[in-house]
Amino acid sequence: MKQSGDETNRAGMGPSDSGNAANDETTGLPCFRRWRTVYLFVLGCFVCYVVFLVALKWAFS
Amino acid sequence: MSPLDYLVLLGSMVGIAAYGIWRTRGHHNLSTYLKGDQTTGWATIGLSVMATQASAITFISTPGQGYASGLDFIQNYFGMPLALILIAAVFLPMYRRLNVYTAYEFLGRRFDAKTRLLGAGLFLLQRGLAAGITIYAPAIILSTVLGWRLDLTIVLSGVLVILYTVTGGSDAVTHTQKYQLAVIFAGMLTALIVLLCRLPAALSFPDALTVAGGFKKLNAVDFSLDVKQRYTFWSGLMGGLFLSLSYFGTDQSQVQRYISGASLRESRLGLMFNAVFKIPMQFLILLLGVLVFVFYQFERPPVFFNEIAWKAAVQHDPDGKLRSIEQQFAVVHAQKQRLIQTWLNAKHAGDAQAEARARSEALAALDRSESLIAEAKKALTTADPGAKSNDSDYVFITFVLDHLPHGVIGLLVAAFFAAALSSKAAELNALGSTTTVDFYRHLLKREASDAHYVAASKWFTLLWGLVALAFALFANLVENLIQAVNIVGSVFYGVVLALFLMAFFVKRVGGTAVFWAALIAQTLVFILYSSLNISYLWYNFIGCAACMLFSLLLQTVIGPKTGPAQALPAS
Image 1 (cartoon, chains in turn yellow, orange):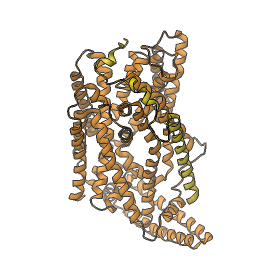
Image 2 (tube, chains in turn blue, red):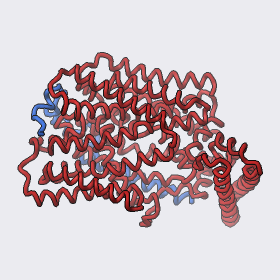
Image 3 (cartoon, one colour):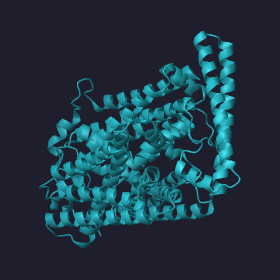
Image 4 (spheres, one colour):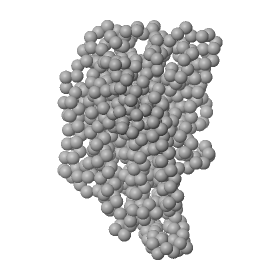
C-alpha cells in the first residue's frame, strides 16, 4: 500500500522550497550569517541562563 | 469579578476570535486551510509555537508550583534548546522539502503507508484522549473560584474555539495565538508589577529575594546525580531533550505551527525564538509564584487555597478541628512575620550573627506553619472525603482575586482563557488535519477537489471539537484524568519518537522492520506498564529504545532493504 509519488502535489500543497533554497542558507541576521552560529548563540544563551540561576541561588541562599 | 472585569474578559476573547475569522476569510484551498498562506514570519511562528505549548494550566499552576517548591521546576526545560536546534537542523528541512501537511506524511515517504498510518493513529489516540482536558482542567478551577457554572464555562469556551478553528483553519489558529499570547503576557506582566507594588513598602526587591532564598525558593539548579530527585540538572537536560524532541518534532499540533512559515528560514528562526525565550518565560512565571510566596509572608494566606472546598469542609467539622488549625496557623504566621522582620533588620545592620539566628528561627516557624497546613489537609479530607488535598493550582488565582484591582482581574482571567483557547485550537487543528490528510484522503477519497478536502477538514475539526467538549462535560475525576492522559501520552510517545528517529538517522532500516518493531515495542510497553511499578515517564525512554533496537534487529533478520518507499530529497 505505497503512497503514490505525486500524491502530495496533487491537492495543491503550496510552493516547494526549492526556489528559496539559496535564501534559506542565510539567516538574514546581521550578526549571525550562518545557522551554525545561530545554534551556538542559542547554546550560549542556555549556558548563561544556567550560570545566572546558579548565581541567583548562591547570592541569596 | 466586576462588570469592568467581564468587559475586559469578553472583549478580548470574542474580539480575538472574531479577528481570526475575519483575517482568514476567503481561504478556500487545502494548502491555505491546513498550512496558512505561506507568508507567516518568524515572530508569528515563534509566538504560535510558544502559545501552543503554554496551556491555561501553565499560567494557573506554574506560579503555584513556584509558591510551593520554588524555581526547581525550571530544570524541566533544560533539554528544550538542544531539542529545538536538532529539529531546526534536521527535522524541519525534511518536512519542508517534502512539502508535507502532517509529520506522518513524512513517515509514509520515508518508510511506507502502514508506518504512516501507525504514526498518525498513535497521535490521534493520545491527542484525542487529551483533547477534553485542555478545556476541562482550567474550567474546573476557574468555575470553582469564580462561582460560574462548570458546564456553561466549558461549552462557551469550547464553542468559541471550535468556531474560529473550523472557520479559519491553521492561519486563524496562528494569528489568534499571537494576540492571545499578547493578552497572556500583558496579564502576567501586570500581575508581576502589581505584586511588586503590593509588597511591604520597607521591603526592597533584594530583600524579597533574600526572604525567598532564605526559605530555599531560589534553588533552581541541582547538579546531584540522585535519580530519586524529581528535578535535577541532568534529568532536565536528558529527559527534557527527549520529551521536547517528541513533542516539538513529532506532535502534529506543533509541527503544523512551524511548517506554515513563509520559508525554511522563517520557520527556523521561529523555533530558535522559542529555544532562547522559553526558559526566561518559565523563569518569570515561577518567579511570580516565588514572589507570591514572599507576599504571603507579610499578608496572612488562607490555610488552604481552595477556599470553597475549605468552607464546605468547615461546615462538616462538628468538633471544630479545622477552625482550631486556622487559629494556630494565624498565631504561627504572626510569629514568622516578626522573625522575618528581625532577620531583615539584622541584615541591614550588618549583624551576621543575629541575621543567622533570626533566619534559622524564621525557618523553624515556616516548618511549623507547613506542618499545620499538612495537618489541615489531612483534617479536610477526613471532614470531606471527596475533597482534593492539593491546592497549589488555586494559589495564583486566589492571589489575583483577593489582591489585584478590578480590570486587572478581568485581564488575568482573560489570560487564562486565552491560554486555554490557544492550545486547544492548535490541538483541534492538528486532529482535523491528520484525520483528513492521513486517513480520509489517503484511505477513503483519494481523488477529490480541494474544496471537498477543505470541507472534510472542517467537518473533522468540528467532530474533534465536539468530542473534546463531550469529554470535558462528562469528566468528573479531573486529577485522575490528567494523570491518565499523561500516562497514555508517555505510553505512546516513545514509540512515535523512535519512528521519527529511525526515519531521520538510520537510513538502512526500512518500513517493514520499523513497523513491526513499533508494534512489538508498543506491546512490550503495555506489558511492562501492567507489571512494573515505575514512574510512567520512564515508558517514554523504554518505548523509544525498544523500538529502535527491535528495528535494527528485524532489519538484520529480513536482510537489507531494497530502498525507501519514495526517494527523499538530499538533505
